Every structure is written in structure tokens, then in C-alpha cells.
Image 1 (cartoon, rainbow, N blue to C red):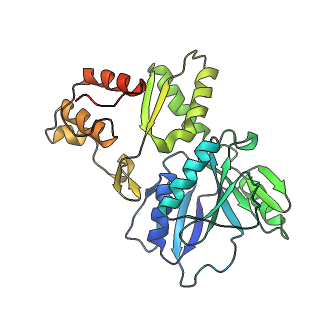
Image 2: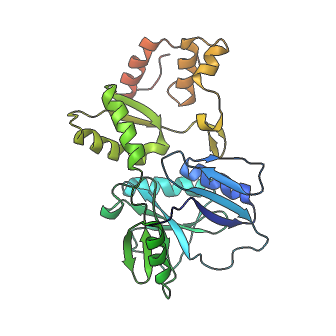
Image 3: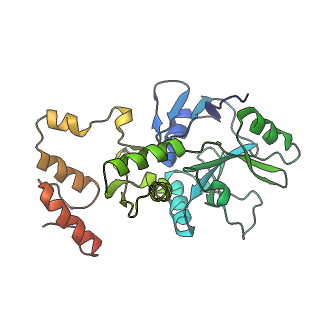
Length: 290
């Protein structure tokens, strides 16, 4: 019988600062910024949290474990690296070589992470692809945690061992795909943090017999601070709250369009105008109704 991984902990000189970086990187939510120990709550179906614990001493050597973050293509990998560096990460050299397909970064306190290309062994994961154990002289560590958690080893080379959740994020992907199928949803507009889920959900829709899966459009995240997105799971204002405060449907639609950059200035938009707005945008025109 295996155990269950519920938290992965980081030592941090500034737990809140580091938590904000990872919250933005993963589009997860911060549980409570006032705690001394800061916890991140997954928003993508990941079954464990990240916890940041205060320590006085700075990081002095390479970590023995790191996370692999999954990109969908070379172009997406470059976009991810640019976004992570804009949040405070830096490229680092751990001996990976100039021809490596993965990109090695250090977070704001130097903790290593890799941005990898989605391959066969990461075909069904979300953004977090694997936990990698790197003590080359002690490969037993990775094998121990594989046995302890029940997670399969998906990479074993030169002492580096990567394990991944045997269930991946399939429950989240499955529920979302069934919901779209049952309700006959043909257009899904959502934040760019869910790009990694799109291919999986299209594949699941086809497996369920849907000949023409929904069309997916991804917009830049609407941020409430430089590092935190608006999130209903974080208690942020929702459409129901705005309507209860007296906003008309046209005002809600207009402000939403402005927030994601579809119009330059906020104004009331009727629902029937949205189709015209997206038609102009898809045709390569200026996304504006005047």
C-alpha cells in the first residue's frame, strides 16, 4: 500500500516572495499570505500543495530534487521561459550543455526547475510534469519515493530519476471534457494558464465520440497584482457579485472585454455584439467595435 504526497516543501529566506513567484508561475492560489509558512493551493487538479518554510541560511548548493514544467512546443517553451524570467527566474548552467532540449532556470532564491518539451512519458500531465531526483550517487532516493508514493519512474538516466503522479491530472481533464460534451459547448474562452490542458481535453472529447471538439481561445491572465491572477477560489469578485451590486449584463460584458484586451476602452456591450467582436479578431482585424 502506497502513501500519498500532500505537500512539497521549499526552504525560503523570503517565503511570501517565493510563494508569489510560484503562484504566478503555476497560476495557483496562495492560501494565506499572513502565515509564517506559506501554502499554495492547486487550481489545475494537482494533488499536492507547495509549502514555503522560513529559514535563515541562503541556498548554498544544487537541490537534490526539482520540478519539470511542461511546454507544448519549442515556441511555447520559449514563451514560458520569457514569462518565468519576467517573474524573477534566471537561466542557470548546471552542466546541461548547449544542445539540451530542456531549459534550466533558477527561481528567485536559486531553486532549480526545468522547462521541458512534452514527450511520450509526459503526454497526460498538466503543467507540472514530474518531480526529478538528482543525487547521481544515490539513485535509490528516487526509487524509494516511487515505491512510497506509487508514482511510476518515467525517466532513469545517469542517476537522475523522474517520477510523476500515476493519475496525472486526468480527473480534472475528464470532468472538464464531459461537462463541455454534455452541454454541447463549442467555444471555450479562458486564461492562458490552461493552455497545457487544451490538447488533452480535445483528445478526450474525440475518445468520447465528439467529431468536432470545442474551439479553445486563451487570453492573457487578468491580474489583481503583478504576481496574482483573479481567482474565484481566492474569494475574488465574481459575476454574481457584480450583478448584485447593480451592474447590467452589458456592463459586465464590456468590462470583461476591456480586461482581456478585446476593446481598448470599457463600454457597455450587448451579448449580440460579442460575435462580431470575435469575428473581426479571428479575421486578423483590429479587435474593436469602435
